[in-house]
Image (cartoon, rainbow, N blue to C red; front, side):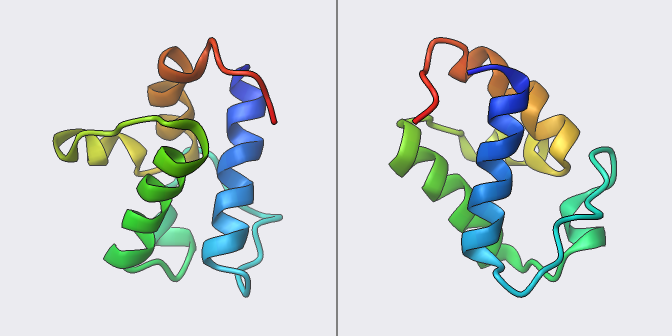
Length: 86
């Protein structure tokens, strides 16, 4: 998957987890928690969806790498580079 595909996939996951949030104005460099009403369970749901949909394992010590869209895409790009977009 390309970085753009990964960004789209993260947006899809966020839409499922937080359907009432407006993701149209999401700033890539600003932490999700500063922009969205996400709690720690929502954040874990993001990690679980990545595992369920793409078999991507994110170790707990790396959760901080998923703070913003930009850092999430940067972290996931090498892990998902060989995956095809569904």
